Amino acid sequence: MRAIVPFKRERAKSRLSPVLSGEERSEFAQAMLRDVLCALSGSGMRIDVLTTSVSGAMRANTENVVVCELGLNDALNQYLDSMVEHSEIEPVIIIMADLPLATEEHINEICSRDSDVVIVPGKRGGTNVLFLKDPSRFRVDYYGTSFLDHIRIAKDAGLSIEVFDSFMLSTDIDEPGDLIEVLIHGRGEAAGYLRNLGFEVCADNERVELRRRGNG
Amino acid sequence: MRAIVPFKRERAKSRLSPVLSGEERSEFAQAMLRDVLCALSGSGMRIDVLTTSVSGAMRANTENVVVCELGLNDALNQYLDSMVEHSEIEPVIIIMADLPLATEEHINEICSRDSDVVIVPGKRGGTNVLFLKDPSRFRVDYYGTSFLDHIRIAKDAGLSIEVFDSFMLSTDIDEPGDLIEVLIHGRGEAAGYLRNLGFEVCADNERVELRRRGNG
Image (cartoon, rainbow over all chains, first blue to last red; front, side, top):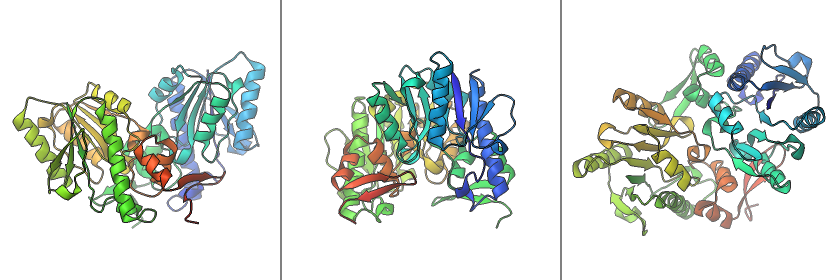
Protein backbone atom coordinates (compact mmCIF):
# COMPACT_ATOMS: atom_id res chain seq x y z
CA MET A 1 0.00 0.00 0.00
CA ARG A 2 1.23 3.46 -0.80
CA ALA A 3 -0.06 6.99 -1.10
CA ILE A 4 0.62 9.64 -3.72
CA VAL A 5 -0.24 13.27 -3.02
CA PRO A 6 -0.09 15.68 -5.97
CA PHE A 7 0.97 19.09 -4.72
CA LYS A 8 1.30 22.33 -6.63
CA ARG A 9 3.21 24.95 -4.72
CA GLU A 10 3.95 27.57 -7.37
CA ARG A 11 1.04 29.93 -7.91
CA ALA A 12 -0.91 27.68 -5.57
CA LYS A 13 -4.53 28.43 -4.78
CA SER A 14 -4.74 31.56 -6.91
CA ARG A 15 -8.51 31.78 -6.43
CA LEU A 16 -7.86 32.61 -2.78
CA SER A 17 -6.10 35.82 -3.84
CA PRO A 18 -9.06 38.02 -2.76
CA VAL A 19 -8.35 37.07 0.86
CA LEU A 20 -4.74 35.78 1.04
CA SER A 21 -1.47 37.25 -0.25
CA GLY A 22 0.82 35.19 -2.47
CA GLU A 23 3.05 34.23 0.45
CA GLU A 24 0.04 33.39 2.61
CA ARG A 25 -1.44 31.22 -0.12
CA SER A 26 1.83 29.32 -0.39
CA GLU A 27 2.06 28.83 3.38
CA PHE A 28 -1.61 27.86 3.60
CA ALA A 29 -1.21 25.31 0.78
CA GLN A 30 1.70 23.74 2.68
CA ALA A 31 -0.32 23.67 5.91
CA MET A 32 -3.12 21.85 4.07
CA LEU A 33 -0.58 19.41 2.63
CA ARG A 34 0.76 18.72 6.12
CA ASP A 35 -2.79 17.99 7.31
CA VAL A 36 -3.18 15.45 4.52
CA LEU A 37 0.23 13.90 5.29
CA CYS A 38 -0.75 13.72 8.96
CA ALA A 39 -3.95 11.85 8.04
CA LEU A 40 -1.87 9.42 5.97
CA SER A 41 0.98 8.98 8.41
CA GLY A 42 -0.90 6.78 10.87
CA SER A 43 -1.27 4.01 8.32
CA GLY A 44 2.45 3.35 8.03
CA MET A 45 2.26 3.26 4.23
CA ARG A 46 4.87 4.79 1.95
CA ILE A 47 3.91 8.36 1.06
CA ASP A 48 5.09 10.11 -2.11
CA VAL A 49 4.45 13.79 -2.75
CA LEU A 50 4.25 14.47 -6.47
CA THR A 51 5.33 17.97 -7.38
CA THR A 52 6.36 19.83 -10.50
CA SER A 53 9.76 21.25 -9.61
CA VAL A 54 12.51 20.87 -7.07
CA SER A 55 12.00 24.39 -5.78
CA GLY A 56 8.42 23.48 -5.09
CA ALA A 57 9.29 20.46 -3.04
CA MET A 58 8.81 20.75 0.67
CA ARG A 59 11.04 19.42 3.39
CA ALA A 60 9.42 16.77 5.47
CA ASN A 61 10.34 13.70 7.40
CA THR A 62 7.67 11.22 6.55
CA GLU A 63 7.36 11.43 2.78
CA ASN A 64 9.36 11.12 -0.41
CA VAL A 65 9.29 13.84 -3.03
CA VAL A 66 8.72 12.81 -6.64
CA VAL A 67 9.44 15.58 -9.13
CA CYS A 68 7.70 15.45 -12.49
CA GLU A 69 7.17 18.36 -14.86
CA LEU A 70 4.29 16.75 -16.72
CA GLY A 71 0.68 17.79 -16.22
CA LEU A 72 -1.31 16.13 -13.45
CA ASN A 73 -2.79 13.28 -15.48
CA ASP A 74 0.40 12.38 -17.34
CA ALA A 75 2.46 12.64 -14.17
CA LEU A 76 0.09 10.38 -12.22
CA ASN A 77 -0.24 7.83 -14.99
CA GLN A 78 3.55 7.75 -15.37
CA TYR A 79 3.77 7.21 -11.62
CA LEU A 80 1.25 4.35 -11.79
CA ASP A 81 3.26 2.84 -14.68
CA SER A 82 6.45 2.98 -12.64
CA MET A 83 4.70 1.22 -9.76
CA VAL A 84 3.63 -1.57 -12.05
CA GLU A 85 7.12 -1.97 -13.51
CA HIS A 86 8.96 -2.08 -10.23
CA SER A 87 6.86 -4.10 -7.85
CA GLU A 88 4.23 -6.67 -7.18
CA ILE A 89 0.68 -5.39 -7.42
CA GLU A 90 0.44 -2.80 -4.68
CA PRO A 91 -2.69 -0.78 -3.90
CA VAL A 92 -2.36 3.00 -4.07
CA ILE A 93 -4.39 5.88 -2.69
CA ILE A 94 -4.25 9.14 -4.66
CA ILE A 95 -5.29 12.02 -2.45
CA MET A 96 -5.28 15.71 -3.26
CA ALA A 97 -3.21 18.07 -1.12
CA ASP A 98 -6.01 20.59 -0.51
CA LEU A 99 -8.17 18.43 1.77
CA PRO A 100 -7.42 19.79 5.24
CA LEU A 101 -10.44 18.05 6.78
CA ALA A 102 -9.07 14.59 5.94
CA THR A 103 -8.47 12.35 8.95
CA GLU A 104 -6.70 9.09 9.66
CA GLU A 105 -10.14 7.47 10.08
CA HIS A 106 -11.08 8.47 6.53
CA ILE A 107 -7.90 6.93 5.15
CA ASN A 108 -8.34 3.71 7.11
CA GLU A 109 -11.97 3.38 6.04
CA ILE A 110 -11.21 3.98 2.37
CA CYS A 111 -8.29 1.57 2.28
CA SER A 112 -10.28 -1.18 3.98
CA ARG A 113 -13.08 -1.26 1.40
CA ASP A 114 -13.44 -4.35 -0.75
CA SER A 115 -13.99 -2.74 -4.14
CA ASP A 116 -11.32 -2.53 -6.83
CA VAL A 117 -11.79 1.23 -6.98
CA VAL A 118 -12.98 3.57 -4.23
CA ILE A 119 -13.75 7.11 -5.35
CA VAL A 120 -14.43 10.10 -3.12
CA PRO A 121 -16.36 12.79 -4.97
CA GLY A 122 -15.46 16.43 -4.69
CA LYS A 123 -17.78 19.30 -5.45
CA ARG A 124 -18.94 19.88 -9.04
CA GLY A 125 -17.99 16.43 -10.27
CA GLY A 126 -14.42 16.41 -9.02
CA THR A 127 -12.45 13.45 -7.68
CA ASN A 128 -10.77 14.15 -4.37
CA VAL A 129 -9.51 10.70 -3.41
CA LEU A 130 -9.05 7.62 -5.55
CA PHE A 131 -8.10 4.23 -4.14
CA LEU A 132 -6.90 1.62 -6.62
CA LYS A 133 -6.41 -1.99 -5.57
CA ASP A 134 -4.48 -2.69 -8.76
CA PRO A 135 -2.91 0.41 -10.38
CA SER A 136 -2.04 -1.52 -13.54
CA ARG A 137 -5.72 -1.65 -14.50
CA PHE A 138 -6.58 2.04 -14.24
CA ARG A 139 -5.62 5.35 -15.87
CA VAL A 140 -6.54 8.60 -14.17
CA ASP A 141 -8.36 11.42 -15.96
CA TYR A 142 -8.63 14.45 -13.70
CA TYR A 143 -10.23 17.85 -14.46
CA GLY A 144 -13.79 18.47 -15.64
CA THR A 145 -16.31 15.98 -14.28
CA SER A 146 -13.58 13.50 -13.39
CA PHE A 147 -15.89 11.73 -10.94
CA LEU A 148 -18.03 10.55 -13.85
CA ASP A 149 -14.97 9.88 -16.02
CA HIS A 150 -13.30 7.75 -13.35
CA ILE A 151 -16.47 5.71 -12.85
CA ARG A 152 -16.63 5.12 -16.59
CA ILE A 153 -12.95 4.14 -16.75
CA ALA A 154 -13.41 1.66 -13.91
CA LYS A 155 -16.54 0.17 -15.51
CA ASP A 156 -14.83 -0.13 -18.89
CA ALA A 157 -12.00 -2.02 -17.18
CA GLY A 158 -14.46 -4.38 -15.48
CA LEU A 159 -13.54 -3.10 -12.02
CA SER A 160 -15.90 -2.93 -9.05
CA ILE A 161 -16.47 0.62 -7.78
CA GLU A 162 -17.53 2.13 -4.52
CA VAL A 163 -18.40 5.77 -3.89
CA PHE A 164 -17.16 6.94 -0.50
CA ASP A 165 -19.54 9.61 0.74
CA SER A 166 -17.82 12.24 2.89
CA PHE A 167 -18.53 15.93 3.31
CA MET A 168 -15.12 16.47 4.91
CA LEU A 169 -13.31 14.84 1.97
CA SER A 170 -15.53 16.61 -0.57
CA THR A 171 -14.28 19.90 0.84
CA ASP A 172 -11.33 20.81 -1.34
CA ILE A 173 -10.25 24.37 -0.72
CA ASP A 174 -10.29 26.63 -3.75
CA GLU A 175 -12.33 29.73 -3.00
CA PRO A 176 -12.66 32.15 -0.09
CA GLY A 177 -16.00 30.64 0.97
CA ASP A 178 -14.30 27.26 1.40
CA LEU A 179 -12.24 28.72 4.25
CA ILE A 180 -15.47 28.84 6.28
CA GLU A 181 -15.53 25.03 6.26
CA VAL A 182 -11.90 24.87 7.42
CA LEU A 183 -12.65 27.22 10.31
CA ILE A 184 -15.83 25.39 11.36
CA HIS A 185 -14.66 21.79 10.97
CA GLY A 186 -10.85 21.93 10.90
CA ARG A 187 -8.65 20.70 13.74
CA GLY A 188 -5.28 20.73 11.97
CA GLU A 189 -2.56 23.06 10.76
CA ALA A 190 -4.57 24.72 8.01
CA ALA A 191 -7.32 25.74 10.43
CA GLY A 192 -4.72 26.96 12.90
CA TYR A 193 -2.94 28.95 10.20
CA LEU A 194 -6.16 30.76 9.24
CA ARG A 195 -7.04 31.49 12.86
CA ASN A 196 -3.56 32.90 13.45
CA LEU A 197 -4.09 35.23 10.50
CA GLY A 198 -7.23 36.51 12.23
CA PHE A 199 -9.85 34.73 10.15
CA GLU A 200 -13.15 33.92 11.79
CA VAL A 201 -16.67 32.95 10.85
CA CYS A 202 -19.34 35.55 11.55
CA ALA A 203 -22.96 34.49 11.61
CA ASP A 204 -26.27 36.12 12.10
CA ASN A 205 -29.59 34.51 11.26
CA GLU A 206 -29.35 35.63 7.66
CA ARG A 207 -25.79 34.98 6.59
CA VAL A 208 -22.59 33.15 7.46
CA GLU A 209 -19.51 35.08 6.40
CA LEU A 210 -15.75 34.91 6.48
CA ARG A 211 -14.04 37.86 8.16
CA ARG A 212 -10.46 38.76 8.92
CA ARG A 213 -9.83 40.75 12.06
CA GLY A 214 -7.88 43.92 11.45
CA ASN A 215 -9.06 44.07 7.85
CA GLY A 216 -12.13 46.19 8.63
CA MET B 1 -39.16 6.57 15.97
CA ARG B 2 -40.57 9.30 13.81
CA ALA B 3 -39.43 11.80 11.22
CA ILE B 4 -40.29 15.46 10.81
CA VAL B 5 -39.58 17.23 7.53
CA PRO B 6 -39.90 21.03 7.51
CA PHE B 7 -41.09 22.13 4.08
CA LYS B 8 -41.62 25.64 2.77
CA ARG B 9 -43.61 25.71 -0.43
CA GLU B 10 -44.52 29.38 -0.78
CA ARG B 11 -41.73 31.40 -2.36
CA ALA B 12 -39.62 28.26 -2.10
CA LYS B 13 -36.01 28.29 -3.26
CA SER B 14 -36.00 31.92 -4.36
CA ARG B 15 -32.22 31.84 -4.91
CA LEU B 16 -32.84 29.50 -7.83
CA SER B 17 -34.76 32.25 -9.64
CA PRO B 18 -31.89 32.92 -12.09
CA VAL B 19 -32.48 29.47 -13.60
CA LEU B 20 -36.01 28.36 -12.63
CA SER B 21 -39.38 30.14 -12.90
CA GLY B 22 -41.61 30.47 -9.85
CA GLU B 23 -43.74 27.51 -10.89
CA GLU B 24 -40.65 25.43 -11.66
CA ARG B 25 -39.13 26.26 -8.28
CA SER B 26 -42.32 25.14 -6.56
CA GLU B 27 -42.44 21.89 -8.54
CA PHE B 28 -38.72 21.27 -8.00
CA ALA B 29 -39.08 21.86 -4.25
CA GLN B 30 -41.85 19.26 -4.15
CA ALA B 31 -39.76 16.80 -6.17
CA MET B 32 -36.92 17.21 -3.65
CA LEU B 33 -39.39 16.70 -0.79
CA ARG B 34 -40.62 13.49 -2.41
CA ASP B 35 -37.01 12.26 -2.68
CA VAL B 36 -36.58 12.86 1.05
CA LEU B 37 -39.90 11.14 1.84
CA CYS B 38 -38.83 8.22 -0.34
CA ALA B 39 -35.56 7.90 1.63
CA LEU B 40 -37.58 7.90 4.86
CA SER B 41 -40.35 5.59 3.73
CA GLY B 42 -38.32 2.39 3.87
CA SER B 43 -37.87 2.66 7.61
CA GLY B 44 -41.57 2.30 8.39
CA MET B 45 -41.45 5.21 10.83
CA ARG B 46 -44.18 7.82 11.14
CA ILE B 47 -43.41 10.79 8.88
CA ASP B 48 -44.73 14.30 9.53
CA VAL B 49 -44.27 17.13 7.05
CA LEU B 50 -44.19 20.47 8.85
CA THR B 51 -45.45 23.31 6.71
CA THR B 52 -46.64 26.85 7.24
CA SER B 53 -50.07 26.88 5.66
CA VAL B 54 -52.75 24.51 4.43
CA SER B 55 -52.39 25.74 0.87
CA GLY B 56 -48.73 24.81 1.06
CA ALA B 57 -49.42 21.28 2.14
CA MET B 58 -48.87 18.60 -0.44
CA ARG B 59 -50.97 15.55 -1.04
CA ALA B 60 -49.19 12.34 -0.31
CA ASN B 61 -49.93 8.88 0.90
CA THR B 62 -47.16 8.14 3.31
CA GLU B 63 -46.95 11.22 5.49
CA ASN B 64 -49.01 13.42 7.77
CA VAL B 65 -49.12 17.16 7.29
CA VAL B 66 -48.59 19.35 10.34
CA VAL B 67 -49.49 22.99 9.76
CA CYS B 68 -47.81 25.60 11.94
CA GLU B 69 -47.47 29.29 11.14
CA LEU B 70 -44.56 29.87 13.51
CA GLY B 71 -40.99 30.29 12.30
CA LEU B 72 -38.86 27.19 11.82
CA ASN B 73 -37.30 27.06 15.29
CA ASP B 74 -40.50 27.80 17.22
CA ALA B 75 -42.48 25.39 15.06
CA LEU B 76 -39.98 22.57 15.55
CA ASN B 77 -39.60 23.15 19.28
CA GLN B 78 -43.39 23.22 19.65
CA TYR B 79 -43.50 19.95 17.73
CA LEU B 80 -40.87 18.40 20.01
CA ASP B 81 -42.87 19.62 23.03
CA SER B 82 -46.01 17.99 21.71
CA MET B 83 -44.13 14.71 21.23
CA VAL B 84 -42.98 14.79 24.83
CA GLU B 85 -46.49 15.51 26.12
CA HIS B 86 -48.25 12.80 24.19
CA SER B 87 -46.00 9.80 24.24
CA GLU B 88 -43.25 7.78 25.75
CA ILE B 89 -39.76 8.92 24.84
CA GLU B 90 -39.58 8.43 21.10
CA PRO B 91 -36.52 9.24 18.96
CA VAL B 92 -37.02 11.72 16.14
CA ILE B 93 -35.10 12.56 13.00
CA ILE B 94 -35.42 16.11 11.70
CA ILE B 95 -34.47 16.24 8.04
CA MET B 96 -34.66 19.18 5.67
CA ALA B 97 -36.78 18.89 2.54
CA ASP B 98 -34.09 20.12 0.13
CA LEU B 99 -31.78 17.10 0.34
CA PRO B 100 -32.52 15.22 -2.88
CA LEU B 101 -29.38 13.06 -2.55
CA ALA B 102 -30.62 11.49 0.70
CA THR B 103 -31.05 7.71 0.56
CA GLU B 104 -32.66 5.04 2.69
CA GLU B 105 -29.14 3.86 3.63
CA HIS B 106 -28.31 7.28 5.05
CA ILE B 107 -31.46 7.25 7.18
CA ASN B 108 -30.84 3.73 8.45
CA GLU B 109 -27.22 4.52 9.31
CA ILE B 110 -28.08 7.72 11.16
CA CYS B 111 -30.89 6.15 13.16
CA SER B 112 -28.74 3.19 14.18
CA ARG B 113 -26.00 5.28 15.80
CA ASP B 114 -25.57 5.03 19.55
CA SER B 115 -25.15 8.70 20.41
CA ASP B 116 -27.89 10.81 21.99
CA VAL B 117 -27.60 13.30 19.15
CA VAL B 118 -26.45 12.69 15.58
CA ILE B 119 -25.86 15.80 13.51
CA VAL B 120 -25.26 15.97 9.77
CA PRO B 121 -23.49 19.18 8.80
CA GLY B 122 -24.55 21.20 5.80
CA LYS B 123 -22.38 23.70 4.00
CA ARG B 124 -21.33 26.91 5.77
CA GLY B 125 -22.15 25.66 9.24
CA GLY B 126 -25.68 24.51 8.56
CA THR B 127 -27.48 21.53 10.06
CA ASN B 128 -29.12 19.31 7.47
CA VAL B 129 -30.21 16.35 9.59
CA LEU B 130 -30.59 16.06 13.34
CA PHE B 131 -31.35 12.80 15.11
CA LEU B 132 -32.48 13.04 18.72
CA LYS B 133 -32.79 9.95 20.88
CA ASP B 134 -34.76 11.91 23.47
CA PRO B 135 -36.49 15.03 22.11
CA SER B 136 -37.36 16.24 25.61
CA ARG B 137 -33.70 17.08 26.23
CA PHE B 138 -32.99 19.23 23.17
CA ARG B 139 -34.12 22.52 21.65
CA VAL B 140 -33.32 23.28 18.03
CA ASP B 141 -31.67 26.52 16.93
CA TYR B 142 -31.48 26.67 13.13
CA TYR B 143 -30.05 29.46 10.93
CA GLY B 144 -26.55 30.93 11.12
CA THR B 145 -23.89 28.42 12.15
CA SER B 146 -26.49 26.06 13.57
CA PHE B 147 -24.05 23.14 13.37
CA LEU B 148 -21.93 24.77 16.07
CA ASP B 149 -25.00 25.90 18.02
CA HIS B 150 -26.51 22.41 18.04
CA ILE B 151 -23.25 20.89 19.25
CA ARG B 152 -23.14 23.45 22.06
CA ILE B 153 -26.78 22.78 22.97
CA ALA B 154 -26.14 19.04 23.13
CA LYS B 155 -22.99 19.49 25.22
CA ASP B 156 -24.76 21.86 27.61
CA ALA B 157 -27.46 19.22 28.08
CA GLY B 158 -24.86 16.54 28.79
CA LEU B 159 -25.77 14.59 25.65
CA SER B 160 -23.35 12.49 23.60
CA ILE B 161 -22.91 13.76 20.04
CA GLU B 162 -21.84 12.20 16.78
CA VAL B 163 -21.12 14.04 13.54
CA PHE B 164 -22.34 12.08 10.52
CA ASP B 165 -20.05 12.89 7.62
CA SER B 166 -21.84 12.79 4.26
CA PHE B 167 -21.30 14.80 1.10
CA MET B 168 -24.68 13.74 -0.24
CA LEU B 169 -26.48 14.92 2.90
CA SER B 170 -24.41 18.11 3.07
CA THR B 171 -25.77 19.01 -0.35
CA ASP B 172 -28.79 21.15 0.37
CA ILE B 173 -30.02 22.84 -2.76
CA ASP B 174 -30.16 26.62 -2.62
CA GLU B 175 -28.25 28.07 -5.56
CA PRO B 176 -27.96 27.33 -9.28
CA GLY B 177 -24.53 25.71 -8.82
CA ASP B 178 -26.07 23.19 -6.43
CA LEU B 179 -28.13 21.79 -9.30
CA ILE B 180 -24.87 20.43 -10.74
CA GLU B 181 -24.63 18.07 -7.76
CA VAL B 182 -28.22 16.89 -8.28
CA LEU B 183 -27.52 16.16 -11.94
CA ILE B 184 -24.24 14.34 -11.24
CA HIS B 185 -25.26 12.33 -8.17
CA GLY B 186 -29.06 12.30 -8.16
CA ARG B 187 -31.14 9.22 -8.93
CA GLY B 188 -34.54 10.46 -7.78
CA GLU B 189 -37.40 12.73 -8.78
CA ALA B 190 -35.53 16.01 -8.39
CA ALA B 191 -32.77 14.89 -10.76
CA GLY B 192 -35.37 13.61 -13.21
CA TYR B 193 -37.29 16.88 -13.02
CA LEU B 194 -34.18 18.90 -13.90
CA ARG B 195 -33.26 16.58 -16.76
CA ASN B 196 -36.79 16.84 -18.15
CA LEU B 197 -36.43 20.62 -18.13
CA GLY B 198 -33.31 20.22 -20.27
CA PHE B 199 -30.66 20.85 -17.64
CA GLU B 200 -27.29 19.21 -18.11
CA VAL B 201 -23.75 19.50 -16.83
CA CYS B 202 -21.18 20.70 -19.36
CA ALA B 203 -17.53 20.16 -18.65
CA ASP B 204 -14.28 20.95 -20.30
CA ASN B 205 -10.92 20.75 -18.58
CA GLU B 206 -11.29 24.23 -17.19
CA ARG B 207 -14.83 24.50 -15.93
CA VAL B 208 -17.92 22.54 -14.99
CA GLU B 209 -21.11 24.43 -15.76
CA LEU B 210 -24.86 24.09 -15.61
CA ARG B 211 -26.66 24.54 -18.92
CA ARG B 212 -30.26 24.36 -20.02
CA ARG B 213 -30.91 23.13 -23.53
CA GLY B 214 -33.03 25.49 -25.57
CA ASN B 215 -31.97 28.45 -23.44
CA GLY B 216 -28.96 29.29 -25.64
